[in-house]
Every structure is written in C-alpha cells, then in structure tokens.
Length: 459
Ligand SMILES: [Fe+2]
Image 1: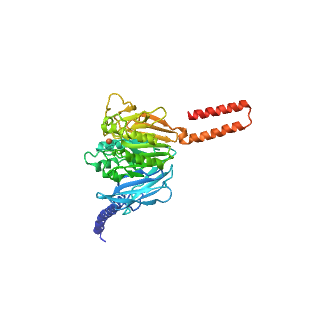
Image 2: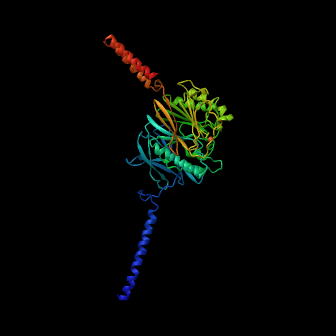
Image 3: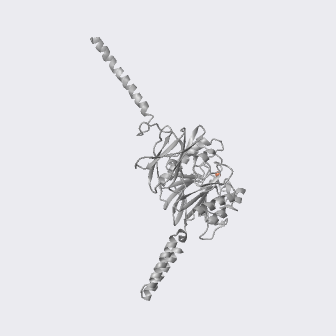
C-alpha cells in the first residue's frame, strides 16, 4: 500500500465512520421516539375525553375514552402489586372514531390503583393512578357550570380542578351540576376537549348532571356513564340516575325534564332500593332557590310549587344545583317555606367553576329563602365532608382558596342508628343499676347521671 493510498484512506475513513454512526444513531432514535418510556416495544395509545365515572356504589368505577381503535381494554391493578387485570370495553362507533366504556367492580376502600388503556392494535396509554376513599368518612368536590365556550374558559377550568385537588387530595370524587359546555356556537367537540383536558379527570371519579346547554348533545350521552338510570323524558339523553357511596344515596335528576311525576317515580324507587341510607343528596341543574336572574322566571316559580314537596317526601337532606351562576345557601326549607327549627332540606346553588359567566343578583335584597348569597366574580368549588353524624359543605374561591361559606347539617342520632344503640345501652345500664345492690343514694346518683347523659345525647 502506497503512502498516497494510505493518506487517501486515512483522510476518507473518519467521515465514513461518522456518517455510518449518525445513520445508525438516527435509526435507533426514530425507533425509540415512538415508545413510551419504560413501556417496551409498544406505541403510545392516543386517546381523548378520558374520564372516570362513579358506578352504582363505591366499589365500582367506569372508565370511558375516545380513540381510533375498533376495540379497547382497561388494564388495572392495585398500585405496584401483581399483574394488570384486563377488562374488555363496550365499544361504539362515534364520528370517525370510537368511544369505549369499561366497568370495573370489586374495588377496595382506601387503596391506590393504577390503570392503562389498551387498543385493538396493542398500543397502550401511559399509566394513570387513582385512590379510593373511605366510605364511612369521606369528602367529595362539587362544581357548577363550567359552561366552557373558549380556550380561556378551559384554562380557568383546569386551574379550578388543580386548586381543588391540590388542596383536597383525599376527595373521593367530583360531582358537577351541569352545563359542562356552552354549545351555543355549535362547537361542542372543541368545548368537550377543553372540558376533559384537566389531568385530574384521569384520577378523580365523577358524576355530572346534565344542564340545559348539554341537553341532547351526543357527546354528553356518549362520554359519561350513569348507573341505575330511569328514563324521564322523550330523548335518549333524558334520564335520572342514582348511586350509593357509603351511607349516602345520591340521586341525580335531569331537570331539563319538568315532568314531576316521572321524577317522583324515580326518587321513590331509588329511596326504596336504599332504605338504609343515612343521607339523601339530590343533584340537578336548574336551581329552585337562587339569587340570579333565573330565580324569578316563570319556570322556576312554577317548579317551586311541586319539586320541593318531592324532596320533603323522601326526606332529602341536601339539594345541590347550578344554572344561576352565583352562590346561594338557603335556610332549611320545607313545603316551599322556611322550615321549623331542626327540620327541612338545605338547598345550595353553586357559582361558575370556570368564570365563563357570572350573573348579578336579580334583586337588591336577598330573597326570604336565602341565608347566604354571594357573587365573588371568581371561579368557585365546594368540598362536602360526610360522616354518619354530620355533613359539612364549604365553598372556596379557586383563585385565592379563600373560604366564602361553610355550613354543617347534623343528623339526628336516632335516625343514624347511633342513637338507637346508645338508647339500648342506656336502658341496659339503668336496669342493671336498678337490680344491683346499691345504697339508695348511690343508685339515685347513678340513675340521675345516666339519664342526664342520655338527655344530652338526644337533645
Ligand atoms: Fe344552565
């Protein structure tokens, strides 16, 4: 080999190696850029509108999502424990793609789970996680009227849910009182994409009522799961539903349907199927007692002549509504009047959770039914803490986390069963005192003390 040749080869070898190395590196980069981190040779499933809906009770959840796959599965396991168990989805065609729903039951309380979605072509989503609550003592979040019409509304909606979950990470689920989207511009696909955009909806079970703006929208009907439904209107989307969480019976009404008898049939059936429920909470969109412009319409005034009596009949404790884009907490109400001390139902109307619209009060002075009214002109959300003895609703501004109202309803201990137990124990002690050999003075003191204790518990 001549020196010239060597020089020539010496000059050409390094660029060839570099080019080869670049080509090989590019090939690997191309292959691995399609892989989710740590997921092996599997492409990432691209899905939209992923949301978890509450099932019929605290042990059941429904996962729903949209993609371009003709079938789907949810794979779930307790966080870090064992293999994923796969659940086949019910799939239906929607537009150019598909919507999938998977029902998962038998969930444990106070546990952490992780799940992923799997497409027909074996592609997988990222792994999401959620926690289950403790049904004997739990909190849930409530929001009113996101009514998303713009990207700006979506941004505030995401901030509201972020603030709610960051400050109340143990909330077991989220309820919404309807008007998830605006749809007056006929752009519900974009609006729903914004509505489903918060990552919190991938980890927080939900139950959303239908509002007047959602009414009849196929994306509402296709995106959420509703357990224990009862048709109450002519449309495929017009139905009531109920679910149970611990000792609370939640009944969600489609208030676009004003058929009182249909709602009564549903409410009676739900209560009959849950005769041991301690708390009864009813959720629907069109508030009966609020302070905004909807509070003085003929429709609202007309409903006040019938709907409150339905709730009196079933012994509802709390009604949560929206629609009027301002906050109102009533006095305890019964028979469309302020109730006597120690009885009645509390009605709460929630303000906007996205800031898309705030309504001014309809009148300068509060209505007679109002205990508290507020228009913060800031996105708000509520936290409801529940145990068998008390239910407390607290309302927060999402932008400052200032609490704007809080109120507690105490349950009569006799109704909860706690009182029955205490009464039985008290009677047994009184009998034992009477039967035992005590000096009269000691017997008298013991009897008086126990009687006074019982009076304090039951008063
Ligand atoms: Fe509304």
